[in-house]
Amino acid sequence: MKTKRYITFLITIALTLSSSLALSSEKSLYDRIGGEKKAKEIVSDIWNNHSKNPIVKDRFAKSSPEYVKKRVFEIFAAATGATDVSYDGLDMKVAHTGMNISEMEFNAVVDDVLAACASNGVAQQEMNEVLAILWSVRKDIVNSNILTDNLVSSEAPSSSPSHNKEASSSSEKKVERDAHYCLTSLEC
Ligand code: HEM
Image 1 (cartoon, rainbow, N blue to C red):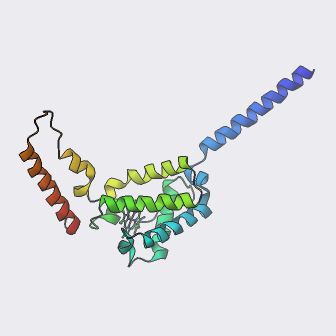
Image 2: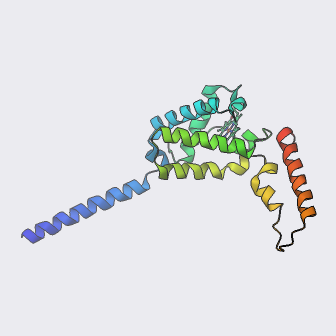
Image 3: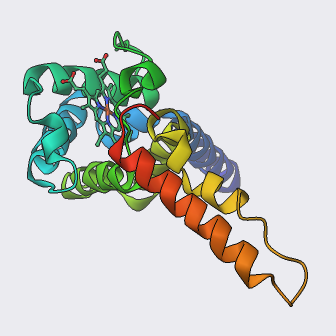
């Protein structure tokens, strides 16, 4: 009789544990971060970080904080799996086209987002997932002419050890010139 009760007890524990494990692994990133309240606090800190970040603050000098926070909250919520928030703003490519955003600026924005997450107690696993989401929109935001990927791939590595120094330095100069042109022109 005692053994039967013990087995029933063990089965109950196992069922409770497995259902709570299933529930936690099904939770969206949005819910794991803390839902609407936490997401709004993070977005507010992202705005504050941008306003103090010398690399990007001028970009937002003429923006309305309420408008940017509203849109960034929507996209943050929708991208992390909120089911009750929809993003009503522009497509990322359309929103940033013509801004001539560099990778350095993109990285500065990523730093601001992750710093806001960290200061709001977001755990490392969730921070990694946020970073992966941000990284997935990098090519839509950064001026494609100055993506490091492009600079690297246009500089095909030499298979021979006697690398042609002249050809290398002239193509390096071209990359340098193109990058300079793109950083200073709104037309590329
Ligand atoms: C890292 C990923 C980024 C995300 C997810 C993001 C998201 C957004 C969103 C949702 C909007 C509003 C679009 C709309 O008006 O409908 C926006 C606008 C804008 N973004 Fe980004 N952005 C990112 C990176 C950047 C970077 C790197 C810069 C430049 C440093 C930048 C500068 C701007 C500016 C200046 C606006 C216009 C704000 C305004 O309307 O006043 N963004 N962005």
